[in-house]
Image (tube, rainbow over all chains, first blue to last red; front, side, top):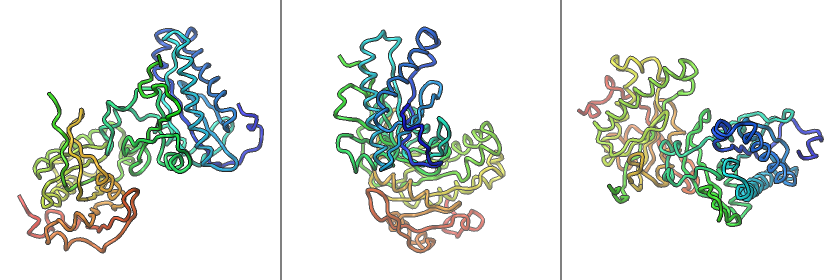
Length: 219
Length: 193
């Protein structure tokens, strides 16, 4: 965890919120055992998140059972926190891809990631508020969500793992402040508990040549 | 069998949202609420076919429908609006608070997908965002749609309003209160078979 955690924090802050879910973690644990495989996988993921987040303003790292909720803070600019969060997520996916080439298949990590930006309530080692719920809603989007979307991409083109989705807020920041990310709308969706239509984007990066779409191992 | 090639079409696009769907789930529970939504979908699908919609796509607590003939749209909306008033629809009565509608006219790509037919394009987004502006039991009609409606219908519309939309710019629209045009109170020209 970042050393800045010890500093007093305001009660409400604007942070970049990242939800990371370990794909099929329950299935893997049931098949190969929590103590043999599952526990190490989630610990490895925590360690990798710590490595990529440490210098990028990672402020909160909380387990969600089969993944993690992270927040990133930048004291100068909330928008920069979003950039740091996206950088960290792609660095994480890169490291995971490298790790997956070194370990047996049952120990491979495959992730679903979502990034949002908004005001959150700061509670010890946790964050609360509707923007947290929004980030979880984004992470929960899957191929099955697309038939109920407007202007959706074909469901077959939606990746199964190792991808990054983001909200309109984050997409706006990336399009203004970064050139090395590519954004593709996956459609307008209704997210449970939130009024109106939300355009959701998939982020890809030219600098990360791993086939993040399919989650296949690089040769 | 290979899917038909996408077609560029100019269509009237209708978005419909059930008012208070989250409140309904909280009030009656998800089991009853899902029965309400299921019955609503069955009726909307039937009414869409009756009124010659070329596509109707259900979106959880609402739908997107497309029509080639603008004259079919308002009678279709009134038939939807009337669903919760008809005694035979016992599951819906007292449970549906109403609907929000939008109507826009534009060019879309009509495609066949793995989940059925769909329409794609920026005009679909405009129709969706117009429905967010609508009040309960109201239809928000874009100027582009209004200009293509039969003259009788155009007289129902309120004052012109403007709202900017991302990637599109300003969109002009007007509002119509459908509740005033329910079957028993609607003008003669609304009473179509």
